Image (cartoon, rainbow, N blue to C red):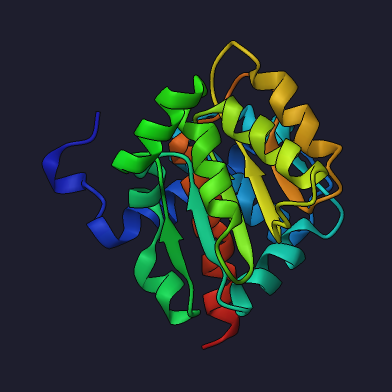
Amino acid sequence: MTTHSEWIRPEDIEKRSMEIIGQEMPDGNWTPEELAVVKRCIHTSADFDYAQNLYFSDQAVCHARKALAQGATIVTDTNMAAAGINKKALERLGGSVRCFMAEEETAREAKARGITRAAVSMEYAAALKGPLIFAIGNAPTALIRLYELIREGKAEPAFIIGAPVGFVNVIEAKELIRTAGIPCIIARGRKGGSNIAAAICNAIVKLQTAEVK
């Protein structure tokens, strides 16, 4: 048991955590950038399943970094995910975060149409200007509606992070995005969450900000 005198300094906790993760990581064929994303998800969740269930489309991190370099807006489906993204680092890249879920207009329209707020949020987000990164960590209906908007020619995301958590339509919604032809990172299966969506964003933002120093 660690005593008070043996506590690791606050600034060394993350470094030591990453060392432990590196020691316990299973073998994989990730690129260095993909590995940074995988390790960040494990660091956030203490769940090594992310070493197996994260799907990267071809050159996924490169596509995401290109969007960030162009000042992308990151759209989330929860305020929790939005709160977890490193906004100061994102602002250095000319980017910002938007979430429409808690807005009164979203709630009114969703009720009037009998659909989820998450679905309406995707419609509002699709109208934003500039490159868009969608980071979905909670609502499978957000991914489903986003997929529909892409098929309808009403949305052109630069990148999608699909990590909703749960049991109903979660796996199916993620698989739809894998077939949408958009660069993406998907947390396959039931696991995910707003924290994972934010972690993936932060890993990629950190890679890009390191590049522009």
